Length: 548
Image (cartoon, rainbow, N blue to C red):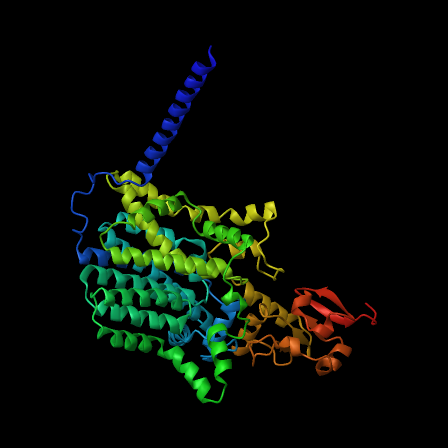
Protein backbone atom coordinates (compact mmCIF):
# COMPACT_ATOMS: atom_id res chain seq x y z
CA UNK A 1 0.00 0.00 0.00
CA UNK A 2 1.47 3.39 -0.99
CA UNK A 3 2.57 5.49 1.96
CA UNK A 4 0.36 8.42 0.88
CA UNK A 5 -2.79 6.24 0.84
CA UNK A 6 -1.86 4.74 4.22
CA UNK A 7 -1.41 8.24 5.69
CA UNK A 8 -4.75 9.31 4.22
CA UNK A 9 -6.53 6.37 5.86
CA UNK A 10 -4.88 7.14 9.18
CA UNK A 11 -6.02 10.75 8.89
CA UNK A 12 -9.61 9.69 8.17
CA UNK A 13 -9.52 7.26 11.10
CA UNK A 14 -8.20 9.96 13.40
CA UNK A 15 -10.93 12.34 12.26
CA UNK A 16 -13.56 9.67 12.83
CA UNK A 17 -12.18 8.93 16.30
CA UNK A 18 -12.08 12.62 17.13
CA UNK A 19 -15.62 13.10 15.89
CA UNK A 20 -16.77 10.10 17.93
CA UNK A 21 -15.07 11.48 21.07
CA UNK A 22 -16.56 14.94 20.66
CA UNK A 23 -19.96 13.44 19.92
CA UNK A 24 -19.84 11.43 23.16
CA UNK A 25 -18.75 14.52 25.13
CA UNK A 26 -21.60 16.50 23.62
CA UNK A 27 -24.06 13.74 24.55
CA UNK A 28 -22.75 13.72 28.14
CA UNK A 29 -23.02 17.53 28.26
CA UNK A 30 -26.59 17.33 26.96
CA UNK A 31 -27.49 14.60 29.45
CA UNK A 32 -26.09 16.29 32.54
CA UNK A 33 -26.40 19.99 31.75
CA UNK A 34 -28.85 20.87 29.01
CA UNK A 35 -32.49 21.06 30.14
CA UNK A 36 -35.17 18.98 28.49
CA UNK A 37 -38.73 19.95 27.70
CA UNK A 38 -40.73 19.96 30.89
CA UNK A 39 -43.30 17.17 30.43
CA UNK A 40 -43.85 15.86 33.95
CA UNK A 41 -44.60 19.28 35.50
CA UNK A 42 -47.17 21.00 33.35
CA UNK A 43 -47.51 24.26 35.23
CA UNK A 44 -45.27 27.23 34.68
CA UNK A 45 -42.04 27.27 36.69
CA UNK A 46 -43.22 30.10 38.87
CA UNK A 47 -46.79 28.99 39.30
CA UNK A 48 -46.19 27.62 42.81
CA UNK A 49 -47.80 29.90 45.32
CA UNK A 50 -46.02 31.49 48.27
CA UNK A 51 -48.16 29.44 50.62
CA UNK A 52 -46.87 26.23 49.07
CA UNK A 53 -43.30 27.49 49.35
CA UNK A 54 -43.76 28.26 53.03
CA UNK A 55 -45.39 24.89 53.65
CA UNK A 56 -42.32 23.33 52.07
CA UNK A 57 -40.18 25.53 54.31
CA UNK A 58 -41.90 24.19 57.43
CA UNK A 59 -41.53 20.60 56.23
CA UNK A 60 -37.82 21.11 55.53
CA UNK A 61 -37.34 22.79 58.90
CA UNK A 62 -39.20 20.04 60.76
CA UNK A 63 -37.32 17.23 59.02
CA UNK A 64 -33.93 18.84 59.66
CA UNK A 65 -34.86 19.58 63.27
CA UNK A 66 -35.78 15.94 63.87
CA UNK A 67 -32.52 14.76 62.25
CA UNK A 68 -30.36 17.05 64.37
CA UNK A 69 -32.27 16.40 67.59
CA UNK A 70 -31.73 12.67 67.04
CA UNK A 71 -28.02 13.09 66.31
CA UNK A 72 -27.02 15.90 68.71
CA UNK A 73 -24.69 15.43 71.65
CA UNK A 74 -26.79 15.21 74.84
CA UNK A 75 -24.19 16.56 77.25
CA UNK A 76 -20.81 18.08 77.99
CA UNK A 77 -18.12 18.14 75.29
CA UNK A 78 -14.41 18.65 74.68
CA UNK A 79 -12.35 21.53 73.25
CA UNK A 80 -14.10 24.56 71.72
CA UNK A 81 -17.54 23.06 72.26
CA UNK A 82 -16.66 22.64 75.92
CA UNK A 83 -15.62 26.30 76.10
CA UNK A 84 -18.98 27.32 74.61
CA UNK A 85 -20.83 25.27 77.23
CA UNK A 86 -18.77 26.78 80.05
CA UNK A 87 -19.28 30.34 78.85
CA UNK A 88 -23.01 29.79 78.46
CA UNK A 89 -23.21 28.34 81.96
CA UNK A 90 -21.22 31.22 83.47
CA UNK A 91 -22.88 33.99 81.46
CA UNK A 92 -19.48 35.01 80.03
CA UNK A 93 -19.96 37.31 77.02
CA UNK A 94 -16.30 38.12 76.36
CA UNK A 95 -14.34 34.93 76.94
CA UNK A 96 -10.58 34.76 77.37
CA UNK A 97 -9.42 34.39 73.77
CA UNK A 98 -9.83 37.93 72.42
CA UNK A 99 -12.67 39.84 70.82
CA UNK A 100 -12.43 38.00 67.50
CA UNK A 101 -13.44 34.81 69.33
CA UNK A 102 -16.02 36.43 71.59
CA UNK A 103 -19.00 35.68 69.26
CA UNK A 104 -21.42 37.78 71.35
CA UNK A 105 -24.60 37.10 69.35
CA UNK A 106 -24.18 33.35 69.72
CA UNK A 107 -23.65 33.63 73.44
CA UNK A 108 -26.65 35.89 73.95
CA UNK A 109 -28.71 33.21 72.24
CA UNK A 110 -27.08 30.52 74.39
CA UNK A 111 -27.84 32.58 77.52
CA UNK A 112 -31.49 32.78 76.46
CA UNK A 113 -31.63 29.00 75.92
CA UNK A 114 -30.54 28.49 79.53
CA UNK A 115 -34.05 29.62 80.56
CA UNK A 116 -35.65 26.57 78.94
CA UNK A 117 -37.41 24.57 81.66
CA UNK A 118 -35.89 21.20 80.81
CA UNK A 119 -32.53 19.41 80.62
CA UNK A 120 -29.19 20.62 81.92
CA UNK A 121 -27.14 23.56 80.68
CA UNK A 122 -24.86 21.64 78.27
CA UNK A 123 -27.84 20.14 76.44
CA UNK A 124 -29.51 23.55 76.10
CA UNK A 125 -26.32 25.09 74.72
CA UNK A 126 -26.01 22.28 72.16
CA UNK A 127 -29.63 22.96 71.21
CA UNK A 128 -28.68 26.36 69.74
CA UNK A 129 -26.74 24.64 66.96
CA UNK A 130 -29.59 22.21 66.34
CA UNK A 131 -32.20 24.94 65.91
CA UNK A 132 -30.17 27.24 63.66
CA UNK A 133 -28.89 24.32 61.61
CA UNK A 134 -32.50 23.40 60.87
CA UNK A 135 -33.24 27.05 60.00
CA UNK A 136 -30.32 27.01 57.56
CA UNK A 137 -31.57 23.88 55.78
CA UNK A 138 -35.08 25.35 55.54
CA UNK A 139 -33.69 28.65 54.20
CA UNK A 140 -31.77 26.78 51.49
CA UNK A 141 -34.93 24.91 50.54
CA UNK A 142 -36.89 28.16 50.31
CA UNK A 143 -34.23 29.90 48.20
CA UNK A 144 -34.19 27.04 45.72
CA UNK A 145 -37.98 26.70 45.72
CA UNK A 146 -38.40 30.38 44.87
CA UNK A 147 -35.57 30.50 42.32
CA UNK A 148 -36.55 27.37 40.39
CA UNK A 149 -40.31 27.37 41.00
CA UNK A 150 -40.22 23.65 41.85
CA UNK A 151 -39.76 21.49 44.92
CA UNK A 152 -37.54 18.87 43.26
CA UNK A 153 -34.25 20.81 43.08
CA UNK A 154 -35.04 22.45 46.41
CA UNK A 155 -35.35 19.06 48.05
CA UNK A 156 -32.10 17.76 46.56
CA UNK A 157 -30.17 20.86 47.65
CA UNK A 158 -31.65 20.84 51.16
CA UNK A 159 -30.91 17.13 51.67
CA UNK A 160 -27.36 17.53 50.32
CA UNK A 161 -26.69 20.25 52.88
CA UNK A 162 -28.47 18.53 55.77
CA UNK A 163 -26.19 15.47 55.61
CA UNK A 164 -22.98 17.24 54.50
CA UNK A 165 -20.40 16.03 57.01
CA UNK A 166 -18.95 19.24 58.45
CA UNK A 167 -22.26 21.09 58.51
CA UNK A 168 -24.09 18.16 60.10
CA UNK A 169 -21.33 17.68 62.66
CA UNK A 170 -21.57 21.30 63.78
CA UNK A 171 -25.34 20.99 64.10
CA UNK A 172 -24.77 18.40 66.84
CA UNK A 173 -22.19 20.31 68.92
CA UNK A 174 -22.07 23.59 70.82
CA UNK A 175 -20.59 25.74 68.03
CA UNK A 176 -21.23 29.20 66.57
CA UNK A 177 -21.32 28.27 62.88
CA UNK A 178 -24.97 27.37 62.37
CA UNK A 179 -26.03 30.82 63.56
CA UNK A 180 -23.69 32.22 60.88
CA UNK A 181 -25.12 29.95 58.19
CA UNK A 182 -28.71 30.78 59.17
CA UNK A 183 -27.87 34.47 58.69
CA UNK A 184 -25.93 33.84 55.47
CA UNK A 185 -28.81 31.89 53.95
CA UNK A 186 -31.19 34.66 55.10
CA UNK A 187 -28.96 37.15 53.29
CA UNK A 188 -29.31 35.12 50.10
CA UNK A 189 -33.09 35.19 50.59
CA UNK A 190 -32.92 38.99 50.83
CA UNK A 191 -30.87 39.11 47.61
CA UNK A 192 -33.45 36.90 45.94
CA UNK A 193 -36.34 39.09 47.05
CA UNK A 194 -34.56 42.23 45.91
CA UNK A 195 -33.76 40.64 42.53
CA UNK A 196 -37.43 39.64 42.14
CA UNK A 197 -39.08 42.86 43.34
CA UNK A 198 -36.48 45.63 43.11
CA UNK A 199 -37.66 46.92 46.50
CA UNK A 200 -34.89 48.63 48.42
CA UNK A 201 -36.18 47.45 51.79
CA UNK A 202 -34.75 44.03 51.06
CA UNK A 203 -31.30 45.59 50.83
CA UNK A 204 -31.87 47.17 54.24
CA UNK A 205 -32.77 43.77 55.70
CA UNK A 206 -29.75 42.28 53.93
CA UNK A 207 -27.33 44.68 55.64
CA UNK A 208 -29.07 44.18 58.98
CA UNK A 209 -28.62 40.40 58.68
CA UNK A 210 -24.97 40.81 57.72
CA UNK A 211 -24.40 43.11 60.70
CA UNK A 212 -25.86 40.43 62.97
CA UNK A 213 -23.50 38.00 61.25
CA UNK A 214 -20.55 40.21 62.24
CA UNK A 215 -21.75 40.09 65.85
CA UNK A 216 -21.74 36.30 65.60
CA UNK A 217 -18.57 35.58 63.61
CA UNK A 218 -16.21 37.70 61.51
CA UNK A 219 -16.72 35.36 58.55
CA UNK A 220 -19.64 37.65 57.70
CA UNK A 221 -17.11 40.35 56.77
CA UNK A 222 -16.26 38.32 53.64
CA UNK A 223 -19.84 38.63 52.42
CA UNK A 224 -19.97 42.31 53.39
CA UNK A 225 -17.22 43.13 50.89
CA UNK A 226 -19.32 41.66 48.07
CA UNK A 227 -22.46 43.46 49.21
CA UNK A 228 -20.61 46.77 49.32
CA UNK A 229 -19.38 46.43 45.74
CA UNK A 230 -22.86 45.33 44.60
CA UNK A 231 -24.50 48.33 46.26
CA UNK A 232 -22.09 50.80 44.67
CA UNK A 233 -22.76 49.22 41.27
CA UNK A 234 -26.51 49.52 41.81
CA UNK A 235 -26.12 53.19 42.77
CA UNK A 236 -23.91 53.97 39.77
CA UNK A 237 -26.37 52.24 37.43
CA UNK A 238 -29.20 54.28 38.91
CA UNK A 239 -31.09 51.28 40.26
CA UNK A 240 -30.68 52.48 43.84
CA UNK A 241 -30.74 56.06 45.09
CA UNK A 242 -27.78 57.57 46.91
CA UNK A 243 -30.13 58.47 49.74
CA UNK A 244 -30.51 54.75 50.55
CA UNK A 245 -26.84 54.39 51.58
CA UNK A 246 -27.22 55.97 55.05
CA UNK A 247 -30.12 53.64 55.80
CA UNK A 248 -28.02 50.65 54.77
CA UNK A 249 -25.28 51.88 57.10
CA UNK A 250 -27.70 52.32 59.97
CA UNK A 251 -29.12 48.83 59.43
CA UNK A 252 -25.66 47.29 59.37
CA UNK A 253 -24.57 49.17 62.50
CA UNK A 254 -27.73 48.04 64.27
CA UNK A 255 -26.77 44.42 63.61
CA UNK A 256 -23.03 44.77 64.19
CA UNK A 257 -23.48 47.15 67.12
CA UNK A 258 -23.16 44.36 69.65
CA UNK A 259 -19.66 43.51 68.48
CA UNK A 260 -18.61 47.09 67.73
CA UNK A 261 -19.85 48.12 71.16
CA UNK A 262 -17.50 45.60 72.77
CA UNK A 263 -14.59 47.14 70.87
CA UNK A 264 -15.53 50.67 71.93
CA UNK A 265 -16.04 49.54 75.53
CA UNK A 266 -12.52 48.13 75.76
CA UNK A 267 -10.98 51.27 74.31
CA UNK A 268 -13.03 53.41 76.68
CA UNK A 269 -11.79 51.24 79.57
CA UNK A 270 -8.22 52.33 78.80
CA UNK A 271 -6.87 49.60 76.52
CA UNK A 272 -4.67 50.80 73.66
CA UNK A 273 -6.32 51.09 70.26
CA UNK A 274 -3.67 48.84 68.68
CA UNK A 275 -4.19 46.05 71.19
CA UNK A 276 -7.96 46.24 70.92
CA UNK A 277 -7.91 46.17 67.12
CA UNK A 278 -5.54 43.19 67.11
CA UNK A 279 -7.89 41.45 69.52
CA UNK A 280 -10.92 42.38 67.38
CA UNK A 281 -9.36 41.08 64.16
CA UNK A 282 -7.22 38.16 65.30
CA UNK A 283 -8.03 37.40 68.95
CA UNK A 284 -5.08 36.37 71.10
CA UNK A 285 -3.59 34.35 68.25
CA UNK A 286 -1.02 35.25 65.63
CA UNK A 287 -2.21 37.25 62.62
CA UNK A 288 -0.25 35.17 60.11
CA UNK A 289 -2.94 32.53 59.35
CA UNK A 290 -5.48 35.29 58.69
CA UNK A 291 -3.12 37.26 56.46
CA UNK A 292 -1.84 34.24 54.53
CA UNK A 293 -2.53 34.89 50.85
CA UNK A 294 -1.49 31.82 48.86
CA UNK A 295 -2.20 28.18 49.79
CA UNK A 296 0.49 25.60 49.23
CA UNK A 297 -0.01 22.25 47.50
CA UNK A 298 -0.79 20.48 50.76
CA UNK A 299 -3.55 22.97 51.58
CA UNK A 300 -5.09 22.54 48.13
CA UNK A 301 -5.13 18.74 48.48
CA UNK A 302 -6.48 18.92 52.02
CA UNK A 303 -9.19 21.35 50.96
CA UNK A 304 -10.30 18.97 48.23
CA UNK A 305 -10.51 16.16 50.78
CA UNK A 306 -12.57 18.32 53.14
CA UNK A 307 -15.06 19.10 50.40
CA UNK A 308 -15.15 15.47 49.31
CA UNK A 309 -15.86 14.39 52.89
CA UNK A 310 -18.94 16.62 52.98
CA UNK A 311 -20.26 15.58 49.56
CA UNK A 312 -19.26 11.92 49.01
CA UNK A 313 -22.06 11.38 46.52
CA UNK A 314 -22.65 11.44 42.75
CA UNK A 315 -25.08 14.30 43.44
CA UNK A 316 -21.99 16.52 43.79
CA UNK A 317 -21.67 16.32 39.99
CA UNK A 318 -24.77 18.53 39.84
CA UNK A 319 -22.48 21.42 40.72
CA UNK A 320 -21.59 21.52 36.99
CA UNK A 321 -25.11 22.08 35.63
CA UNK A 322 -25.75 24.26 38.69
CA UNK A 323 -22.93 26.61 37.70
CA UNK A 324 -24.24 26.60 34.13
CA UNK A 325 -27.68 27.53 35.47
CA UNK A 326 -26.11 30.55 37.19
CA UNK A 327 -25.44 32.01 33.73
CA UNK A 328 -29.17 32.52 33.12
CA UNK A 329 -30.27 36.13 32.68
CA UNK A 330 -33.27 35.69 34.95
CA UNK A 331 -32.53 36.92 38.49
CA UNK A 332 -29.07 37.78 37.22
CA UNK A 333 -28.08 39.85 40.25
CA UNK A 334 -28.79 36.94 42.58
CA UNK A 335 -26.86 34.50 40.44
CA UNK A 336 -23.84 36.80 40.17
CA UNK A 337 -23.80 37.33 43.92
CA UNK A 338 -24.03 33.58 44.55
CA UNK A 339 -20.91 33.09 42.46
CA UNK A 340 -19.13 35.95 44.25
CA UNK A 341 -20.06 34.69 47.72
CA UNK A 342 -19.07 31.12 46.88
CA UNK A 343 -15.72 32.21 45.44
CA UNK A 344 -14.87 34.48 48.37
CA UNK A 345 -15.73 31.93 51.04
CA UNK A 346 -13.98 29.08 49.22
CA UNK A 347 -10.78 31.06 48.68
CA UNK A 348 -10.76 32.17 52.31
CA UNK A 349 -11.14 28.61 53.61
CA UNK A 350 -8.57 27.09 51.26
CA UNK A 351 -5.80 29.50 52.26
CA UNK A 352 -6.62 29.63 55.97
CA UNK A 353 -3.99 27.43 57.62
CA UNK A 354 -5.29 26.57 61.09
CA UNK A 355 -5.81 23.19 62.81
CA UNK A 356 -9.61 23.41 62.42
CA UNK A 357 -9.46 24.64 58.82
CA UNK A 358 -12.28 22.31 57.76
CA UNK A 359 -14.80 24.29 59.83
CA UNK A 360 -14.26 27.39 57.69
CA UNK A 361 -15.67 25.59 54.67
CA UNK A 362 -19.13 25.55 56.27
CA UNK A 363 -20.41 28.77 54.59
CA UNK A 364 -19.17 27.46 51.24
CA UNK A 365 -21.03 24.17 51.85
CA UNK A 366 -24.28 26.11 52.24
CA UNK A 367 -23.69 27.97 48.99
CA UNK A 368 -22.61 24.79 47.18
CA UNK A 369 -25.86 23.14 48.28
CA UNK A 370 -27.73 25.97 46.57
CA UNK A 371 -25.71 25.35 43.40
CA UNK A 372 -26.40 21.60 43.62
CA UNK A 373 -30.12 22.31 43.98
CA UNK A 374 -30.16 24.49 40.87
CA UNK A 375 -28.19 21.86 39.01
CA UNK A 376 -30.70 19.22 40.08
CA UNK A 377 -33.61 21.32 38.85
CA UNK A 378 -31.91 21.85 35.49
CA UNK A 379 -31.05 18.17 35.16
CA UNK A 380 -34.57 17.01 36.09
CA UNK A 381 -36.42 19.13 33.56
CA UNK A 382 -38.36 16.76 31.33
CA UNK A 383 -37.42 13.67 33.33
CA UNK A 384 -39.76 11.38 35.27
CA UNK A 385 -40.31 11.31 39.00
CA UNK A 386 -38.07 8.27 39.27
CA UNK A 387 -35.15 10.57 38.50
CA UNK A 388 -36.31 12.92 41.24
CA UNK A 389 -36.39 10.16 43.82
CA UNK A 390 -33.07 8.83 42.57
CA UNK A 391 -31.38 12.23 43.00
CA UNK A 392 -32.86 12.70 46.46
CA UNK A 393 -31.49 9.27 47.41
CA UNK A 394 -28.11 10.21 45.94
CA UNK A 395 -28.09 13.43 47.95
CA UNK A 396 -28.73 11.37 51.11
CA UNK A 397 -26.04 8.81 50.23
CA UNK A 398 -23.39 10.33 52.57
CA UNK A 399 -25.32 8.92 55.53
CA UNK A 400 -24.48 5.43 54.26
CA UNK A 401 -20.87 6.42 53.53
CA UNK A 402 -20.21 7.74 57.03
CA UNK A 403 -21.23 4.46 58.73
CA UNK A 404 -18.21 2.37 57.59
CA UNK A 405 -15.86 5.31 57.02
CA UNK A 406 -14.12 5.27 60.45
CA UNK A 407 -13.38 1.54 60.13
CA UNK A 408 -12.00 1.98 56.63
CA UNK A 409 -9.83 4.92 57.68
CA UNK A 410 -8.55 3.00 60.72
CA UNK A 411 -7.74 -0.11 58.68
CA UNK A 412 -5.85 1.84 56.02
CA UNK A 413 -3.93 3.94 58.55
CA UNK A 414 -5.26 7.31 57.42
CA UNK A 415 -3.95 10.09 59.66
CA UNK A 416 -6.53 12.67 60.73
CA UNK A 417 -4.05 15.23 62.05
CA UNK A 418 -4.98 14.63 65.70
CA UNK A 419 -1.81 14.63 67.79
CA UNK A 420 -3.02 12.34 70.59
CA UNK A 421 -5.85 10.14 71.73
CA UNK A 422 -8.33 11.16 74.42
CA UNK A 423 -10.08 8.69 76.76
CA UNK A 424 -13.56 7.69 75.61
CA UNK A 425 -13.10 9.54 72.33
CA UNK A 426 -12.27 7.26 69.44
CA UNK A 427 -10.52 9.59 67.01
CA UNK A 428 -11.95 8.03 63.85
CA UNK A 429 -15.51 7.65 65.11
CA UNK A 430 -15.64 11.09 66.72
CA UNK A 431 -14.33 13.05 63.76
CA UNK A 432 -15.52 11.01 60.76
CA UNK A 433 -19.09 10.35 61.85
CA UNK A 434 -21.04 13.60 62.14
CA UNK A 435 -23.66 12.33 64.59
CA UNK A 436 -23.05 12.41 68.35
CA UNK A 437 -26.13 10.49 69.49
CA UNK A 438 -25.87 9.32 73.13
CA UNK A 439 -22.23 10.50 73.37
CA UNK A 440 -21.26 10.86 77.03
CA UNK A 441 -17.51 10.25 76.72
CA UNK A 442 -16.36 13.64 78.04
CA UNK A 443 -18.57 13.52 81.12
CA UNK A 444 -17.66 9.88 81.82
CA UNK A 445 -13.97 10.77 81.66
CA UNK A 446 -14.33 13.65 84.12
CA UNK A 447 -16.43 11.63 86.56
CA UNK A 448 -14.06 8.65 86.59
CA UNK A 449 -10.97 10.83 87.04
CA UNK A 450 -12.68 12.66 89.90
CA UNK A 451 -13.45 9.35 91.61
CA UNK A 452 -9.94 7.89 91.30
CA UNK A 453 -7.81 10.84 92.49
CA UNK A 454 -6.59 10.70 96.12
CA UNK A 455 -7.41 13.51 98.58
CA UNK A 456 -5.30 16.64 98.08
CA UNK A 457 -4.26 15.68 94.55
CA UNK A 458 -3.25 18.10 91.78
CA UNK A 459 -4.37 17.27 88.23
CA UNK A 460 -2.65 18.89 85.23
CA UNK A 461 -4.97 18.73 82.23
CA UNK A 462 -4.95 20.46 78.83
CA UNK A 463 -7.27 22.68 76.82
CA UNK A 464 -9.17 19.68 75.44
CA UNK A 465 -9.69 17.49 78.50
CA UNK A 466 -10.11 20.23 81.11
CA UNK A 467 -13.46 21.43 79.72
CA UNK A 468 -15.65 18.61 81.08
CA UNK A 469 -13.78 18.86 84.40
CA UNK A 470 -14.52 22.59 84.58
CA UNK A 471 -18.16 21.82 83.77
CA UNK A 472 -18.35 19.44 86.73
CA UNK A 473 -16.75 22.10 88.92
CA UNK A 474 -19.34 24.69 87.88
CA UNK A 475 -22.22 22.29 88.44
CA UNK A 476 -20.97 21.19 91.88
CA UNK A 477 -19.97 17.66 90.86
CA UNK A 478 -16.20 17.97 91.34
CA UNK A 479 -14.40 17.44 94.64
CA UNK A 480 -13.16 20.55 96.45
CA UNK A 481 -10.01 18.80 97.69
CA UNK A 482 -8.63 18.25 94.15
CA UNK A 483 -7.01 21.15 92.31
CA UNK A 484 -7.11 21.27 88.52
CA UNK A 485 -4.91 23.17 86.07
CA UNK A 486 -5.73 25.10 83.89
CA UNK A 487 -7.75 26.92 86.51
CA UNK A 488 -11.45 27.47 86.05
CA UNK A 489 -10.96 31.21 86.51
CA UNK A 490 -9.07 31.45 83.22
CA UNK A 491 -9.83 29.72 79.95
CA UNK A 492 -6.30 30.27 78.65
CA UNK A 493 -3.91 27.36 79.12
CA UNK A 494 -2.45 28.56 82.44
CA UNK A 495 -1.08 25.11 83.15
CA UNK A 496 1.98 26.41 81.32
CA UNK A 497 2.58 29.12 83.93
CA UNK A 498 2.17 26.64 86.78
CA UNK A 499 5.47 26.72 88.67
CA UNK A 500 7.23 23.76 90.21
CA UNK A 501 7.42 25.61 93.53
CA UNK A 502 3.64 26.12 93.64
CA UNK A 503 3.04 22.36 93.92
CA UNK A 504 6.36 21.28 95.44
CA UNK A 505 4.70 19.66 98.46
CA UNK A 506 2.29 17.68 96.28
CA UNK A 507 5.19 16.56 94.10
CA UNK A 508 7.07 15.37 97.17
CA UNK A 509 3.99 13.55 98.46
CA UNK A 510 3.28 11.88 95.10
CA UNK A 511 -0.05 13.66 94.64
CA UNK A 512 0.48 15.12 91.15
CA UNK A 513 -1.22 13.61 88.11
CA UNK A 514 -1.41 14.59 84.46
CA UNK A 515 -3.94 13.70 81.79
CA UNK A 516 -1.37 13.04 79.06
CA UNK A 517 2.38 13.03 78.54
CA UNK A 518 2.60 14.82 75.20
CA UNK A 519 5.34 17.47 75.63
CA UNK A 520 3.20 20.17 74.02
CA UNK A 521 0.64 19.82 76.82
CA UNK A 522 3.01 19.85 79.80
CA UNK A 523 4.73 22.72 81.66
CA UNK A 524 8.33 23.02 80.52
CA UNK A 525 9.77 22.13 83.94
CA UNK A 526 7.74 18.91 84.04
CA UNK A 527 9.15 17.54 80.79
CA UNK A 528 12.45 16.44 82.36
CA UNK A 529 13.29 14.86 85.68
CA UNK A 530 9.95 13.17 86.27
CA UNK A 531 8.51 9.73 85.62
CA UNK A 532 4.98 9.22 84.27
CA UNK A 533 3.22 6.02 85.26
CA UNK A 534 -0.10 5.12 83.64
CA UNK A 535 -2.79 4.94 86.32
CA UNK A 536 -6.22 4.24 84.89
CA UNK A 537 -7.14 7.11 82.57
CA UNK A 538 -4.34 9.42 83.71
CA UNK A 539 -0.62 9.42 84.62
CA UNK A 540 0.96 9.54 88.05
CA UNK A 541 3.91 11.98 88.23
CA UNK A 542 6.91 11.08 90.42
CA UNK A 543 10.54 12.29 90.46
CA UNK A 544 12.88 10.06 88.49
CA UNK A 545 15.06 9.64 91.59
CA UNK A 546 12.22 8.13 93.61
CA UNK A 547 11.63 4.35 93.59
CA UNK A 548 9.07 3.18 90.99
